[in-house]
Image (cartoon, rainbow over all chains, first blue to last red; front, side, top):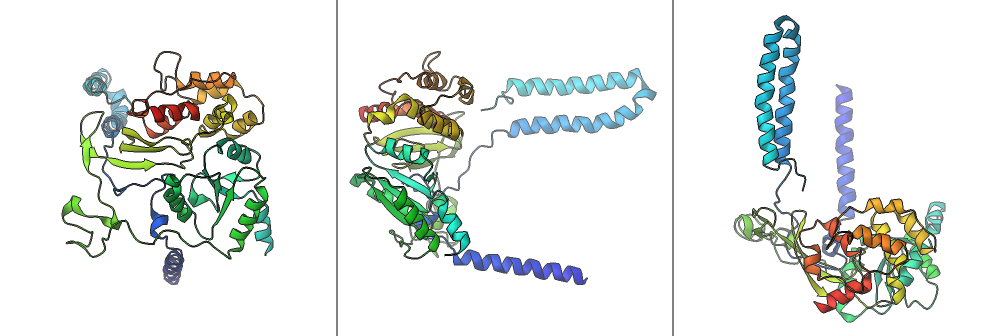
Length: 111
Length: 296
């Protein structure tokens, strides 16, 4: 308990010191403007842009989930034999169609 | 002065240069000599160097850069006639001692009044209407890749951007990481022929590629291996096969001067990402870029 209190107090002290230090060196308006080699800009730098790798991320997650199925499958594979093999083949076949679709849609083109 | 300050004062001072007409080559040789370190942004500099006689149109930019050098700061003027390393070191010692700091030249106020205005104190009404921190939000426009309506960000770069020829002012509109439009506002300052000599141009490009030691070797009259060409992406800025940025760097390394005039700026960098565009612009000599900018 005493350790917990000590850590909490130390953390609070660190925050207080850093807040005081930051306040002392607060940037002025000309300093907090973005640097364009002497140029200027009107709009705020906060803007929305397209995260273009998200389709690739979805495909990655799909194939990662496939591994979740492969672990239990590997455990029963020896007992089940050919039947398990055929089931996994069907599963991978369906996934491969998704992969081909993603390819056609240009998901793997990095630009 | 403490021992720590004396040691720091003997290091090369971090200098941000504002380069005027005819001073590009002398300033680059100054930094290649190692007596000062070129700071790539004012925030990492302690001394602002005004090299040459800067035209009036760039005076406001110098004020902005001066204020972006964190205090305590010093400004040094250099005409190019004398050796500036002593005055740079004196200024740097002054920065480290912290006394006699130069005050801000611009007022400490946001570009627009915003605090406490509007429904939520963000300077306006609605999601897009506010001016948080005194700046309006970016407006949407069509993305050149797929026509999605996303935010466009317009900025004016220069005249003292370290990656562009001094004096060049570009208005660039970015859509995410892509340059959607570019326009020349002011052409670069005229420079001596030595600034457009093949070794100087190749050294500039190598520095951008993160190979400063190779660049220094070139400026001292040495040679670099052709392996550095692999650092330039193949096919960048190819109007026709074999005419890309890599081929232009190869010609400079072989000692041949490049083309006398670059193509029109808008067509040159629209559709590229920022780092590609900068590499591409630097694959033309400052003189070729100046001619292209003045033709526009």
